[in-house]
Image 1: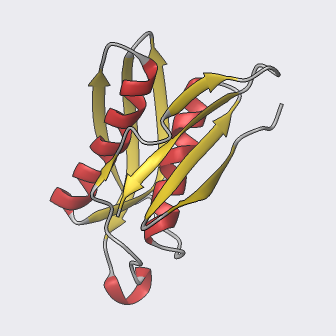
Image 2 (image 1 turned 90 degrees about the horizontal axis):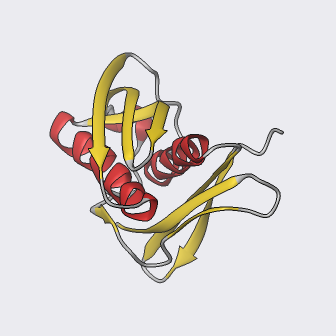
Image 3 (image 1 turned 45 degrees about the horizontal axis):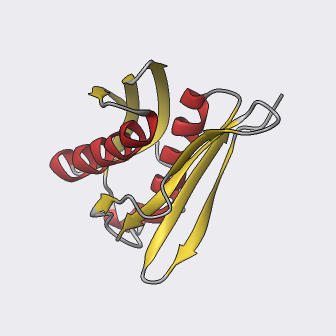
Length: 139
């Protein structure tokens, strides 16, 4: 179907991230790419894999937890991630993030995401069968 893509949407001093895909997992992957693109326009090389898991009562909470897990891994590892493979089963997520340590000179980070919020939170299957997932990220 080829609907995988991401976008940013404006929100006062913060930034909205939204992903689209043929599956909910693809939409989550694309939103993660939007999160990275809010930080840097430079290529992020997939040098080191990091495994993560999340579980919540519903898909919308899972999406916020997913983005916050990425933000946490960015902060504690001082890394950026440019490739994501996500598996979602019911309200559980397992993913591999690939990235590299932040190189300030090359990545020229534009902002530091602080956390995904419930503002504009929406995870839904669209009328055409594709999925979208988005929310506002505090930067």
